[in-house]
Image (tube, rainbow, N blue to C red; front, side, top):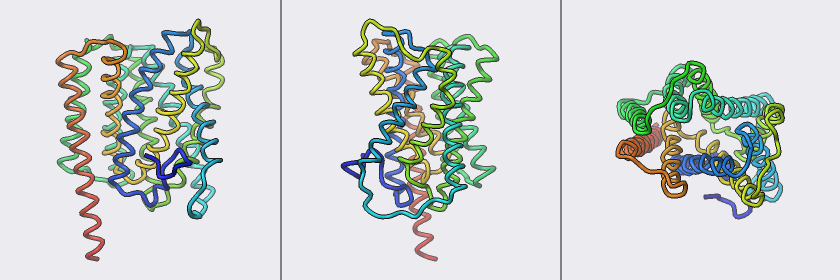
Length: 325
């Protein structure tokens, strides 16, 4: 997926075609889905808590990205991003990432995995679509609206198929806070990338991880930073995987793709995360898949394909109009 044989992140998103941006986002969504399975294995093999795991995920991703950035040779010089804009990007993404992850884990603890996941992922597209309409003036059109509705229907079916759960108001509020954090990251990335000045995805991601890790450190410290385990090699390998694939690599691709793809489309493509998580749960963790789960997964996939097709048509239409002008 990378455009450089020596780097971890793609080429600058300022020159990124929309089709490649969609591909980057799809990979990020699938990779994020594997993080939950890896986390479940870590929790089963040690006493590491969710906040501590989130800290190590951000800290490990930061180290890997800094190493990749040090080794990478840039092919062409790039104009420096204005200081105020860069600071906004770093703090916004870092704080949003911290809120997104920590509030989600807290929601899972408060109201259970099923309810927390459905509220977070179901509210995300709605908040992003509303925020994009109010702040970016983006219109998703009939096909986009139908795709968002289909995605929400798919999530509802997945919830029903997994037995729902006990809904607790505090957990629902935390899940909505998590969805707001994710929506803020998506909208900020899209807003800053509308004029082609999306910055270096590796640098953006590294700084965001650094800010998130600093915010998480005191919380993770109170939970216990170092795991106690009878299988330390397995835990270390899993932590390295979580830091590398669904974190450093996937977030770099996400920030690159989100800068060139409409915000509402990004929100639905990222629903590939629960799809890949469901596949991993069945194939690796031995969980049984129900008919409702299969239907919900199919609806999510159709929604992703529908929005991707609509995004590609919109990009082609924009290019044609630019040529005519």
